[in-house]
Length: 283
Image 1 (cartoon, one colour):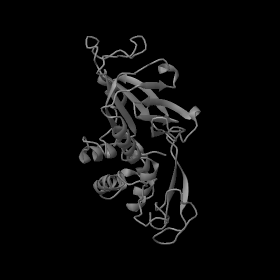
Image 2 (cartoon, helix red, strand yellow):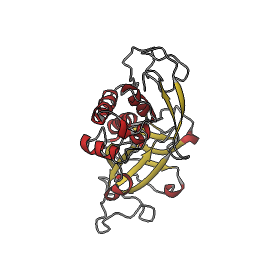
Image 3 (tube, helix red, strand yellow):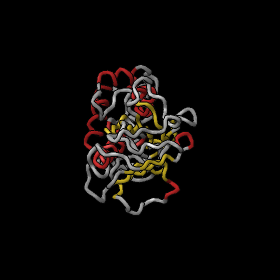
Image 4 (cartoon, rainbow, N blue to C red):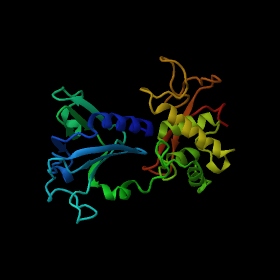
């Protein structure tokens, strides 16, 4: 499942391929935006925000604009040049892939949800959990609820800590996964951070000794992985386990040899997650 570091890398690839380029073709394969055409618009940036991707476009240098009937109304209707943002969320299976013009796609076309083409490159979003186009001025309506972004310029460790401790009875893993507390952590990091702090994922966050250290560890763990081609939280060489506990039920703990256990954690279908832990290393 994509996490904040995956989205960070996806944004970097999109910037390298599209920044400053004029779109020659767009294809939004979702009903609400199926007729929207952003051809002639210029890509101005691709920005990660937690697990969200924001691709911003502006009116093209040739003066072309999207059909007014199909384009979301800009926040400032008196400004016809107001930018638009292509907002996507990868959810479980989503990915953006970059192709040279005319290159054959590596995934079947029926999985494509968004296609953005320039004269030389094509970015294809496959199996995106969410794809929409909104006025750039309205971005806060879709990401404004997020806590400080671990990989963003707004990172604020003290605020993240305060957010986490605002509900001290909440299990540590679910508190870390709540994007309103801090943005960018997914199930892999929630499990691995619990292991590295020596607590089980079920432990109330208010009972963790030195929670400030947990926040610092979260920042370090995602920072060291943001530029790695393959995420690795054990530091072991290629061919060895990349994770201490995540996805390793029944396997031996890399520290003590005890068999890894797992179970579901959560109160309902929207927040139930699988958790893994070492019963010896995590008390």
